[in-house]
Image (cartoon, rainbow, N blue to C red; front, side):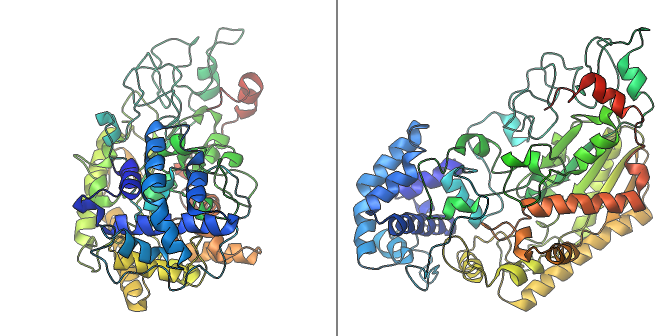
Length: 555
């Protein structure tokens, strides 16, 4: 039970050997740091600081209440003693709680304690948290946050948990439901779901959940009148944590302003694996007030632009982004791609983005041997394309997105202060020391390592062009897009922003909400110029659809 297990390990100091892991050590240090910084900020004893952190969690989940109670009884006196003696959280987790860091005696997060000043709460942040607190701490250690809990097998397959008719669409928002895929409008009928082309239920019923149904005065189906031959197509992204929009709000680790409501959204967002697919640049549709903070005022995504282009596309999206996704674990026969809803002969074509931008070069291993080779990469991608050709409707499109240029992470963030009170450079080194970094190759103080990692990423991206030149497929055409994060940063800075605005502040690794919105706009512009046939025509009936069906049932 990794999500809750880290909390159990930290608060109950289990004697199991698994505690002495890099993750356990980092989690201990970060939690003790948070407790003590809350104590400093509010001038209260450690026991009171723990109550503040646990206060919003305990009434909601008895399991957490019991753990918090255990922490107050067992650990508060020990932490308080070290705190009063001026010892750092590193000392506490190495010496007072020796099981936590016994295998990592030289790894230190804090060179000075307390920090010169604790970080202010970020601009635009609210009291609402975005995931479970220890899940948040674990995320700093790994981009591969996994919910390895006793859920039905469908969770492991990245399919909706609540799906009564088995059509892979749900009325439930979280747990791979309608935050991730268009909302099902009849969860008792497997022939009714977003993106379906064949009407097996008659015009009075919305057979594809796009909010268009019924007939006009002449008895013509509105679906036929407004959507037939309109070039309908859905949007799907096959990706990693960046595609899923992984986000841990920095206020989770920021002592100033913490209250009993800081972690109020823990359960829903834990159910979404600390991802925000409904706010992503690929499949986002949610009002930005419910998304991570950004100074940009309006939601933008590829899906929303496809919907604006043709309102018959309403709700036709699938986000198959998984934390830790790579070309290797995406590929069939047992990979992530298997959770994509087949767009067979009964369904509309699809615009599919293959967007695995980092994990083929990013991992915690301090070497280059664990990075995907170009040969392995090509084999993985070709396997996925064979699967798509067998499962996409004719006239579909596949767009490859380049791997990121991750050198910008260290260049942008290294000298800035992280919310826990140390620099990003120090945090990166600490995670590498613990063998828990999400990306040893780019989150690394060694410029040569960063450069060689980038060279491998560029070699892998070049495979896409090779595949396009050497292969054709029956049911889709292919295109390659180079996603230039440096150009995106330059444009944003020219508008008065900061480069760091485009990188998640908590992990210093993922694209931020702002980056998601900007990238969606840029990729759309590229496709409009270079690959417009993938977007389909503008539906001349859009205004009529809006007048008759309004928001088409929303989401």
